[in-house]
Length: 336
Figure: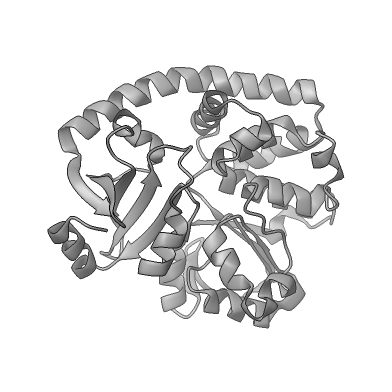
């Protein structure tokens, strides 16, 4: 059979890239799948929404393909279609050859209708990020290593950051933050670099993992200082104040690059939520909604955007794609 394995991953953060690398590592080293049969496709929610609108057709390596026809197996990690109907269609077509790794509560809750959470292969757990869910699915199905504290330390640190569980993991906030920033700089969100190193992280001992985490921290510490100073100036000069989100104080910022809640660090005592907006290639507006304080557990960004705009994401960070008309109303009313 010439059809290939397709791994769709969230390309905008380490969690997506690392979890994709774990899945590929498992296919190659455990299932003995030839690397040439594995295709990596980086996506986000907006890209997947466009693919669904186009009846699952998309361009892959300069060739038009169809997700429901042209692959032997589909793996999705750290990302999903916002409309769960698309996930159901993939499952109905591929059955046990469809694997879904995720940790975003709104879409996981949607999967529980009609028991798709049981039907679809994979691990969906909101208490960890996708990379630790991928590690569990491939290498620790009974959670024995994780429970015994033997899961790779670097993966625990990156998961703690991405899933807002640094407190539960017993990992310092700034340490997790700077390790994540360091690896973003070091590996440049390149899934191939992650893949070339992931086997060593999975099977390396605790000392090996700690040394790499510390190296990431050293890189990230320099990045963090520059990043914080830059963001403070951006917010001061370009932030649009006095917005609200479900009655909560908020500030809006237009950004063309990837963002996180940290861009609003300098104003977290004044605003409970930060909103970032950028134009998508299709002409729509992609928004990201953040709790400015990562210790704020009183508001779930993912649930709010899912219920109001069909988006989704984490408790502290989520996204949605809006039409120009909808976004103009938000600007006019200063209310998301």
